[in-house]
Amino acid sequence: MKNVRALTPTVLLAAGLLVYPLIFSGPFYLDVGVTFLLAAISASAWNIVGGYAGQVSVGHAMFFGLGAYAPLLCYTLFGWAPIAGIPFGIAFSVALAVLIGLPTFRLTGHYFSMATIAVAELIRIYFGTWDLVGAAIGLQGPATARGWWDLTFRSELPYYFIFLAVLAILLRVTFMIERHRFGYYLRAIKAGERAARSLGVPVQQVKIKALALSAAFTSIAGSLYSVKTGFIDPESGFGILVSVQMVIIAALGGAGRLYGPLIGALILIPLQTVTNTWFGGGGTGLTFILYGGIIVLIARYEPGGVSELWEQVVSRRWRRKHAS
Amino acid sequence: MLLLQVIVGGLLLGAIYALFSSGLTLIWGMMNFINFAHGEFVMLGMYVSLLVVVWLGGGPAVFGFASAFALFVLGIFVYFSLIRYVLRGPMLAQILSTFGLALLLRYTAFWIFSANFVSLPQTSLSGTINVGGILMPVPQLVAGIIAILLTVGLHLMLTRTTVGSQLLAVSEDRGAAMLMGIRPDRMQALAWGLSAGAAGIAGALMAIAYPWSPSVGETFGLTAFVVVALGGFGSVPGALIAGLIIGLIQALSAFWFGPIYKDIVVYALFVALLWLRPQGLMGKA
Image 1: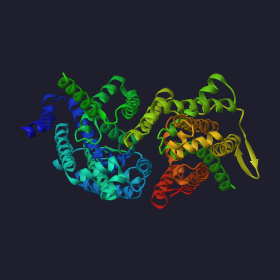
Image 2 (image 1 turned 120 degrees about the horizontal axis):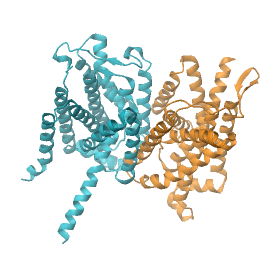
Image 3 (image 1 turned 30 degrees about the horizontal axis):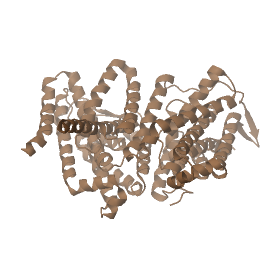
Image 4 (image 1 turned 90 degrees about the vertical axis):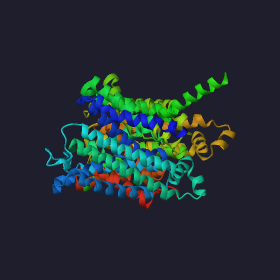
């Protein structure tokens, strides 16, 4: 019985996400759904290192961008199906994660944040000058599908279910980490690195593993994005706002919680869609002002995000009910 | 001769980098806190200068003081309304607080001032002078020299005055400073005021000599990270030397490889530093 109750939110969520495209089948709603899933995947991937391990990366766009460029680069250079590039994106992202993690994880957490933002910017500017990857113009995927393997669909529906499957796998992996010793290590590091080390947690190694895993999934998110849109340029791949979106969604919903990023995306993506449609093309600026405001408010009042706020409300009500 | 001119130009720009980076290093040294909005403070200092010149008129002395004062007040306000609450909070809150502030300031500036590049209307500083065959624009020269003087002044203030000792006392040991009758909260607020004020006046100096747009904040913020990492966290003299070095490297790489590469080289240097000498040139290990 207890197991059934614990599973209820998961089952409801899965059912809701599966049924959504059947009810809201219009192209606009499908697009919102796909955007939501992609945002949830990226933020959940960030959550592994930024939430659970408490190592706040503000440059995850570097992994997203590498993942996004790899499929279209494979298509442009060799004429392969774009999905063949996904493993390359993952490999480069993991290598980069190790390269950044090794020196910065020996230092305090601020160092890691600064290094991530600097490296992401470095790569963005460099890709803007690199002719092989299309410089500032970027790369394009196949205009028309040569076969199903190109994953170039007219409708958004296939993308919706592909993204949903990836999200499910990612959440499943995160759930397993939560239960596994690795997850306890991550939380121990977040609570106090020195204490964790004194208890025999291989801090350095665990942090690098977490970053590598997070980078791999972020890279996949980037690949899904570029395969779907069939286009990538330095700004949409490595731009600072790509990183910002992952951080804000995870923190808004609840960093270091399984469903935190999902809840964050559930709030932010509709909000963003509304502001963009209201204010039109000029609305993107206002959207980022809104992002900044939300981030400041979360930091100041509720670093635990909406999930923690909700738990506080529930426990207060529970206490009141049982006190009388 | 051309190379020499590039070198002097780089050093003069580097002097301004040194000035605003010393503000960043002050905060880091005192409270182990990185301000992601520091570049945005510089950017605001530039726009305050522009507004003062356009609305009130007046020379560089007027808008220099105006933007230093405006940013000093903003720094103290930011400390009391935001930083004080996140200082002892989780890492996520610490980083998100100023990161969000940076976005808020940057995109508000985009919204108000648009993305176009602007520059100050002609001020009393103009023309070029010829120093031993090197042609130096007067605005750059004045801005660079004032920036060096102010950075040295900040260092002297921190090491030679009572207020400076109180600031350092709080950064050394908060509890002990409290027992000596120093109010840490006030001192930390003052540090934020000084830090933002340094950014503001650096912005005013930058505005005299160079055009800008709201996006410069991001570049300056990252540049300040590199300067602080090179000079050693918490060291104002380190920031001065590192600022000059970074200015020089930028000017030379723009001269040799092309302007696009000036930031690439600097950020690459930052990554190399992380690997080779994370404590910086003059920092303690």
